[in-house]
Image (cartoon, rainbow, N blue to C red):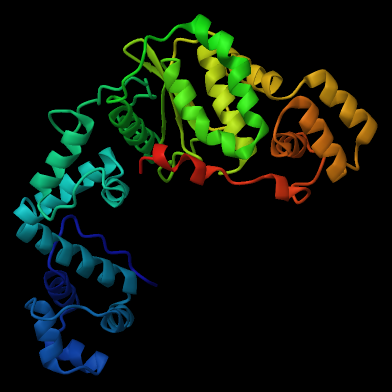
Length: 364
């Protein structure tokens, strides 16, 4: 029957083995002969000069009626104990701890890749770079952001990436010189902004139009794990609209833009980080969504089109309806796809990319 041996504390395997021999009245030579091993091997284990390999653990288990796992675990724990005594508290382990804390605080590798901070071999310099970016005194301080991201002591990687993305947006828009924002002027300008959606090339005119209304604008590609499409918030009483162009299609651009404008138009005073695939369910997001939907396409006329045309939407009908609405056909196609009126594979030629039209406004 296999015995279960449990040492009370971390002990050298050789000491436990020697006790087993004494309990049986065996000598080292006896055990060596039983196992068919040289005497020097048994002596080396007992004196701590040799480690117990998996093969030796199996043989010891057979000879002593124990489990092989007992000897392998005993050896592993003892070697770990020795290593901890040797390196615990050393400069190397302290640096590992600091790097772990730093990489948990921010997406350091991606920030270096984007050029937001400089790479550094020294942990001191790297911490300084991260502190400089977030404008904080030390790692662990809460960054002072216009957007109130969810705060917790143990932030997950998504929230950490959102914090870094938001700080980057703040940095790139703070030098934009704008007139005073007037919500009434924005309300009057909504038809002018929408009129730009008739042609793809007009996307390039949108940023200057927003700036003329006192609205900051920038495109900052999303960081891994953020899955953001856009954001709306305020800096010193002026609204900011930031896009990621996660999806580069014309329909995504216009819906995200008008959704963020919807927050500002409706007078929402909060800060909004939006993933258009998974919007939070609350009154303000619902209101912004409804505004964007109604602005881009007349809902009543769209319902008539669907009722009289579905499920077969020809190129001609799509082009005619878009022309009547003074919208690019891609905006209609994107809506029909989202509403599952047509498959995502249909009419994709209208879903033109617009990212290159916004190159001057993209800040990696």
